[in-house]
Image 1 (cartoon, rainbow, N blue to C red):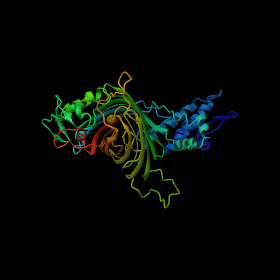
Image 2: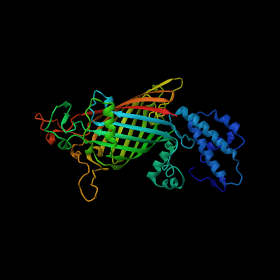
Image 3: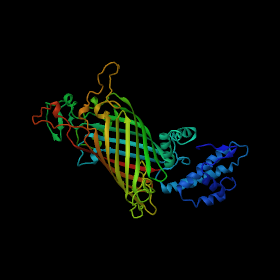
Image 4: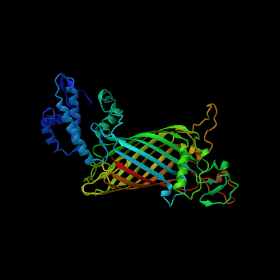
Length: 494
């Protein structure tokens, strides 16, 4: 609804060509529904329908301020919305036009993470398991960005500021906020050391070697060396956006949770009883990070750019690329993209970038991994590979509770004593990490099943235990160089 609606009591079109199209189709006449419906059936371009809807909605807003207003025009708006949603379902997976989407529950997404899914690398340590349940919806839009840079007086104000004007124009051009969906979610994560103890505190194994008795080690001195126990439970909201060309998409999340509560111990204990039956019982959760519970806030944002695709990419319409010949010879299963991401919060703070390959485009794969059914196919398959670099600013699951640095105090608020008795020093944390993700999935009807494997470099540095098994502090660090976990997930469209 950006810009003025009238001058001298006359309607000012946002887009004159779109306005003339509405006039030609009879959309401004409340009695012209049959003619309009016939014309709409011939439009198969999603962007055109979107422009028609926005222009007609502005026109209705203008007419409602007058004494005479044909309410039948609102029926024409509903016809455009219906055709827009029909075309968007054919073109996009889950993403819908913000102004016309109204589905309360779009889908249910559930996944479980466990390092036991990667048997070659799994050693029941580090990120040992997690669970997330996510409900997708067209509601809970909270369009804060749209109400500032995209419309009204605020847009006219920032148009006078060069830097802000550039970004606001790019947002409007990409229409990155117009096609989206939202979700609410609940999740838990558990992190553990590899060193295991029995009920009386005797070490059971270290660096992959079992020991029947290792009395020179005990739970107290081991806390200074292997990674600490850590667990978090959280709820949150996510928003998934894409531009109408399918060349840029974003994912933003906000979550609030409890770090250091009982959920980590309960979750891992259940896994050891029912899934990894032969592994020793984890003893030591009473010394986890922020034991007793601390409130956490986390905010993350990621943006992806399609670099190479037969359907569409960010370079396809760029005329000044030397020797550019288009994408007509490219296979439709070749899609190369890049990503930038960042997260700030009391669980972890980082920034990163990556590059990936997929056999499907952004339009065909939603942010929650549901793929679009291709015409004439009963089963739909997706494969992707991605490599990412992250710089870790602060990791509370290793270093102790904080945003950018460890900031922990006991309950009276006057002491510098840390509430995390077992945490690692900043000097041994690996700040530069590499992650690789391999993803495969199958969709049939409205059900999606997927599996992914994530392999990453070590989170901290350490040395192996000494030959005398004496267990001095400098020799007890976990030395595994590559970690991995698997993710098994299910998506159900409603």
